[in-house]
Image (cartoon, rainbow, N blue to C red; front, top):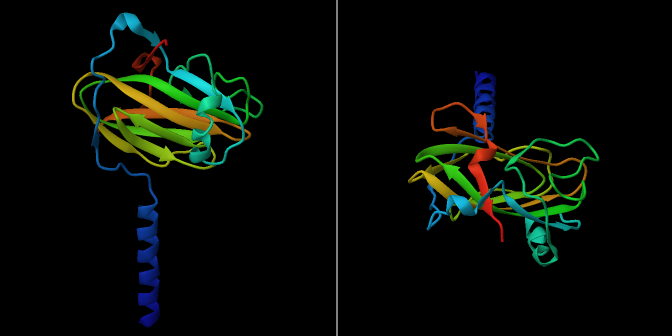
Length: 196
């Protein structure tokens, strides 16, 4: 009998560990829309990006490269799947040791949305004035989990991101769904920036 209870306890602990490690949505955070909303005539497609080139291992190190940046061609958005070895990182001039400072807007319909970012390597995203995601360090193209956000009204929301790729392949991707809806990749139309 004692042996059976030990097996039951081990099984229960394994179930708890499994459930704790699954990507589940956190509580929804409320975003602040851009005020004032940007005029359509001022918006350009995609997200603005400034690149720096150096070896970093964590986002804290990447931040220190902000004074060594130069503008890159705009990103289409968070729509870059995993590259192949040697392929340039997004619109950067290199495939490795790339740091990206990303800025622009994302358009949301009013309501609650679930977001699932993927990156290779580190990524921190601030959306609507709230840091909504961080996956630090070096890792393969993967997510740290689903986040839930609430857009109080339909419109443009400011977005900034800090990203780095150390070596080998790179990715920066976002899937989205309305609460209870179907997952889909984000379309380029929801991204915009203002040329400085």
